[in-house]
Image (cartoon, rainbow, N blue to C red; front, top):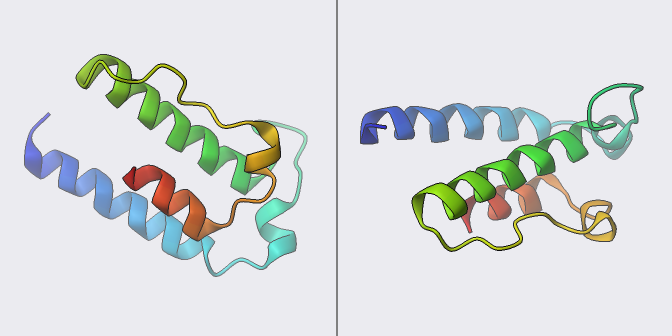
Length: 86
C-alpha cells in the first residue's frame, strides 16, 4: 500500500469517528439485531481487525489484538480513536 493510500484511509476513518462523536450515548450503544450489535461494538471490532492485520502481517508483533467484552462496554469514540492509533 502506498503512503498516499494509507493517508486516505486514515482521513476517511477520522471522518467516520468525527461523525460518531456527534451521537449521544443511546445512539452510540443502541443494540441492533445484526452485525456487532452496536455502532460502538462495530468500531471496536474494526479497530481490532486493524491491529490484528498490522500486528500479524506487517509488524509480526501482535499476539492478542482483541479487547475483552468488559473493556468494550465502557469505550467511547475517543477511546476507539486512541485504540486505532496504538
